[in-house]
View 1: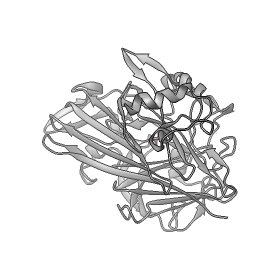
View 2 (view 1 turned 180 degrees about the vertical axis):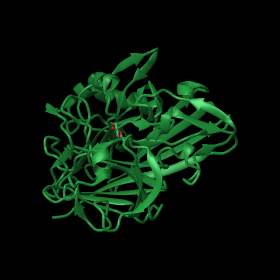
View 3 (view 1 turned 60 degrees about the horizontal axis):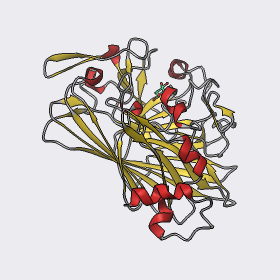
Length: 377
Ligand code: BGC
């Protein structure tokens, strides 16, 4: 079995020293000590670290705890391979972590106002874990669960069940997330879900990127282009007001490449509410071929393109990081990572003018997001 073969690599000291078949190499760990730092058992379920590799020098570490992206190692313009994700050094960091590093968030990613919504005439109450609102599915949600994992050739398939009544939401929802790594340095995330009762659903990944490879740098010099003519404005609790505002002429205009830091401290009410960017951009295209977002770090020469079938993306500039969480001997300070959480719109269950997030029995919800890495000199 591939899983057993992959784990057997824990025993091997160095990848270069061993003779392995291509499928073995694809899952060989980056470092055997890391594998043990991420090995645990919770309620009889094994927590493990998996590695996807391709022939272009990219490696992605994933744990089935929270279906979490632990690291993404990609080359810079000189060919130096470094980790461009924020994360913790061991699995315990993920148990207690509060910043949602790299995990899959749901059942409703982002916020639901006053932690309540109505569906088919019935009112549902959720945990208030963000002031009065509900954030990222509530407490002990899918980001804090051990998922079932299956290794495939160049992919890891993770599944979990969100039970009826879990965090106040209706319906047993079966959720599958497949991470696959392509030879062109694309990490592809395929999501699918079914339910046995009408429910609302918004699933995203919460990876924080720092393309410099060194998270002691802020991301303010990264340049970003977001293919969105508009964004959803928020109130002081970061709940959408319902307005879809044009970005033209505002600090939110990223239609051409602009440094993240250029306008971030402008006295703009929206930026003050978010302590920086923490907003849902309304994407112009939902496509595998037209980038939703492009980000460049000119120093390292790394570039990331994001493609998605989702209607929105939360551009979050790590405003609430405050140095209290650490990894790689670095305290993650404010704005040392950015997230591009592809998603449905926040609070859509309470805002009928937004695209519907209702999932009904018999339907399969699917979405795909691709993070593609490249370099330029
Ligand atoms: C939200 C932020 C929140 C962060 C938590 C983001 O998706 O938009 O407001 O602080 O998640 O890590």
